[in-house]
Length: 492
Image (cartoon, rainbow, N blue to C red):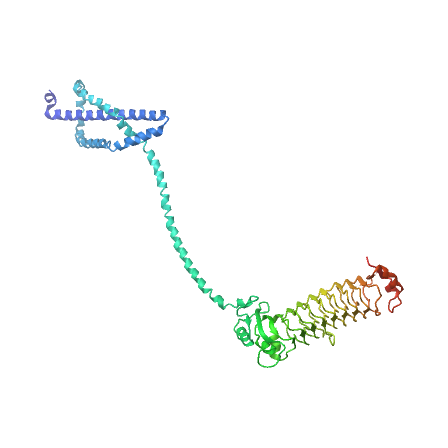
């Protein structure tokens, strides 16, 4: 019948169109079913309390998902759109006018195929849409953050540790062997290496090879076996020792011998003495001769543990001498003239302790302007100008002194008090020029004085024992004037 109506060719075209329409109808039906299924799944996901479980079920189904991609093959049918070449035939609008097509229920029966949408009822396939949920897996791309681990390749930076091989640079330490060349060792006190010598020749050789130094960085040297009393000859004598000195030294002679030290003259000796910064004498030495330390211009300290006698000018005018240890000294010789005392003009000397000295000679410490501490508890006599111009002395106590020479403390501007409880005689001008003197302590018997003995500050007082006040008031000894007696008062 169709053939009659449309002809053979027209009939074929009509059938093709019907097929296309049927296919389109089936696809639309499937898509609708899938959309409804997705909506239902989404509702179920929203309604459930355990979405995670749904996802978990979806995941196991997902393995089947790879099967569903077969359906995408169906899109290959769109390849049939090659048939759309026939759409050129749509120029035949009349054909749609044929209601006959709808009359053919059989063809509509083919829509029964849409009953196949039951296939959409296959939950598995609708679940496959859950694949869109799987996009949550794209969240897993957070794992790409883990690529930060590639940052861990920074660990390869740890190969910087190979930089630690710089430690091999530490082998520079082998350079330290240079230290053996360093003369620092001789600088060490009590150095027992090259700092100790048994002969002058060894000392001379050693010092000549040492770097030049200053008096603030002396080499500490200990010399043994030298007879300090020997001054002549080419052997190990005091003179050859001086000649060996070419660098500044702290010189320890405690292991040497000899009973005394005397002055060694000569240009070479005088120049070499200037290198001695400190000196320790052996216990065998008991006497220091005249000018023995002349030209020791760098000398700062001296230890004389057994010396009992010091001659005039022995340490005269050593401007850098700061301290002297002489616990056994019993007497210091008188100087022959002003400024010729044993320690006269030692302007850096700050303290003097002579625990066993009984006699302090003339000018012994005159013009020691920095002297601020004086201890001579057994001294019985002080010579002429023994301490004159010692401006640093503020308080003096001479508990056993009996005879005080003329000008002994003349012009000691800093002197405030002096105690002479055993004084028998006090010389002329002894305290003259002591402008800050306020207190003089005397014993029970008024000592013999000169007319200018107490020419000092007008405000000073004379303190005596309580039971001796009347004795002083009534004394008829020369130069005890009424004005002077008026200053007498009892000890507090």
